[in-house]
Image (cartoon, rainbow, N blue to C red; front, side, top):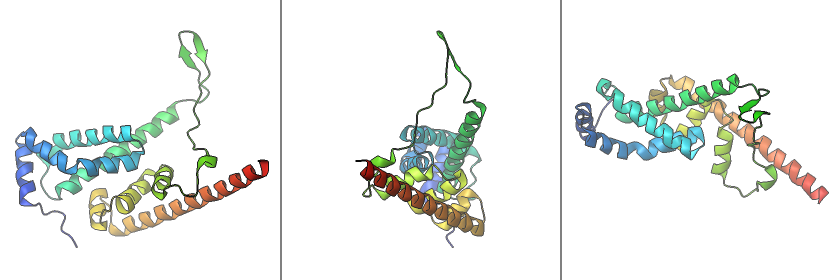
Length: 210
């Protein structure tokens, strides 16, 4: 099994410089990991703007916490754990905010109260073709998974993390990790099957009507 706690010498030196307040050293660390952190945040959030904010927040949290970093895990494991937790925290906050807003509550404006309206964010199934990129479809379906299941699919199937890295980042046992991943993959397959069936039905209805 890979030893995630062993740090390469160049990283040890950079981290030591960062812990002494060297911003240039931290910039070098950020440049090394920013693409991976951004990709992870994008897969978790499904939004480029949100991903940029989440990645920035991740690096800010990491910078503040670096003086307490002891090297018991690799720096990448430690950083990805911050990124995943930042994404999960944001999703929990958004869920809580949605629960606090009444759908029947009117919006107050200078001209009086207006009924609350919500845009239909669901894609039009009739515009989806059989040749649509599988990765784009998966990204859309990922948002329907519970956050914990979304995290393991993103890390393993889209970002290529090893099981050892994932267990270290998520701080769960290997058996729990594999069980969660299996459930997440099964749920994704079911969601994909349902979507394909819906497309077939709507396409058939359109042909009948046209």
